[in-house]
Each structure stands twice: as C-alpha cells, then as structure tokens.
Image 1 (cartoon, rainbow, N blue to C red):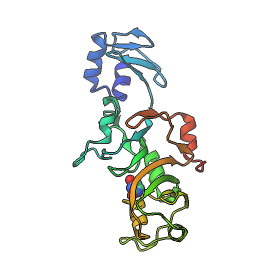
Image 2 (image 1 turned 30 degrees about the vertical axis):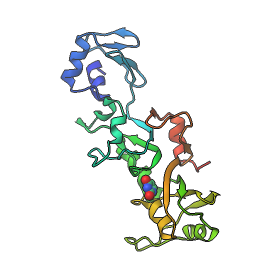
Image 3 (image 1 turned 135 degrees about the vertical axis):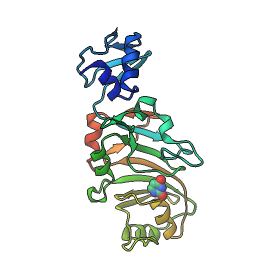
Image 4 (image 1 turned 90 degrees about the vertical axis):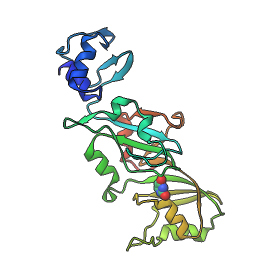
Length: 243
Ligand code: URA
C-alpha cells in the first residue's frame, strides 16, 4: 500500500493533504522520516508518526472509552459536549468506503451515565453488538434514591411494562450490593431502559455506570475521558458471559 493511501485510511486528511505531510518531512515510519508519498508500506500494525504524534495502523478501529458524565453520545449534541471530542482527530476522520465518517458509538449512554462505551468503524460489529437477537449482556451499577427491597428486584427480573412497549422488559440478572446499590444486567438497549425500569418499580436512579459488556470489564486504570484500542483478547471477551 502507498504511504499516502495508508495515512488517508487512518484519518489523517484528504489524499492530497496526506501526500503534502509526507513531502514536507512530517511523517516517520518505524522511526525513519519518509518523504515519498508513493513509498510502499505493509499496513497492519505499522507504527508511524505524523507531526511527532505516534500512531499504530489498524485496518478497522475498535476502541473503548471511559465515558465521563456531562457528555452526549452524538455527533450533533444539544446542551453538552460530544463524546467524540474526547477522541483524537484521526479517529473522527477515518473514511468508510471513501467517505469521512469516523468511528461511531456502539449504542448510546445518557449524558449523565458513566462507564464503558465501545466505538468502531465496523458497521457489522456495531450491528452485532446492538442487536437484541445476539443478547450481549451489559452490566450496570445503579445507585438508587430509595432502598430497594427483594420484591422490587423480583419484579425487575420477572419483567416490567414500559409505556411504549407491548411486551414487558426484564433484567437478565440483578443483585443488590447494598439496599441502594443494584447491579443490573440487560441484554437489550432501549432508550433510558435502566431508568425507566427502576421507575416502573417505584424507585429512582441517582447515578448510573456501565461496568461491563459481555466478559469485557471497564479497566480500573482507564480514567474517565480516556480511551484505548481493543486488543484481540478484548474483542473475544465481548462474546463471553459477564464474569
Ligand atoms: N439505561 C439508561 O437508562 N441510561 C443509559 O445511559 C443506559 C441504560
């Protein structure tokens, strides 16, 4: 693959811009400055830098972000900043089939929800992770306004009726870590689902944090606002049961 085409594929701007960066000596490949835009490179895993910023080539982007509160999962947010502003520009400018689309969030978390958010430019992956047919379990840590009794938890597990749904929705698993701290596992991702389910049993969510998707837990050393690439092991864990 040509070096200018590789830079374009990774979101460093138009082909012309990428060729210009290379010709101006601003791109180093494996530590060596390369000034020929047509230089041949082996893309996958290639380490390069653009204007001193290191990058590793990924044919497709799969990442996790520790979403902080106060950010919207939208490219055109309303009152709050977008989660996409927490990512470096190349991830927001990656082309898909020649068009700049950038990575997309795999489902949405509310503005005030924190925790594990996946992002990717692989449409099939996003669809698979979001599809209720694939039943990917997502674990939420819910801080409740009122102490929850065993009866309310039983109702969440048996299924509660949300206004716009014909069928009741039920939690796949639930456990009270304390009377006001609930661990809830859902396999669907309906709008405000946790908040609406908790409201349906007469309680209220004070804080919501997603700690796990499938077998992949939010790493303790990933601070709010930080992101990282998903390794092959992480991707495999997504299809495993929550541990
Ligand atoms: N359920 C909610 O109510 N909000 C979220 O952000 C995620 C799940």
